[in-house]
Image (cartoon, rainbow, N blue to C red):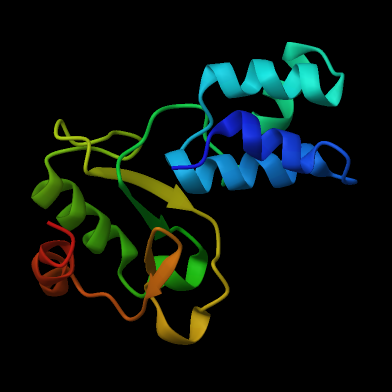
Length: 148
């Protein structure tokens, strides 16, 4: 696992480097740790509040610890019409958590997301940014089994 300080150092002289650093840190840790926010503030010469503001402005980034697998249910109108609500209820039931929560074993976090640009195959779920198309409630156990 890459050290967040090394990641920040490799991005500090790039335009938009703080966002690039945050993406790389999140890829390694699945979230942006508090210590990384403080280091980013120092490296990019911004206040800690500004560094936190950048990290929390984008819905894709998270400053809260999350599970190994980030499950995101698309909540756009096409997915909603295609049955996303039932898929979401099934995900919650099988995982034993609600949206915004992480399973007690730290394996799964369940989130909502805006359109992922795959409206031809709704509803869409992503797991660690990999899309799964045309998800039906009965598919949920098999999908989750691949990650257990």
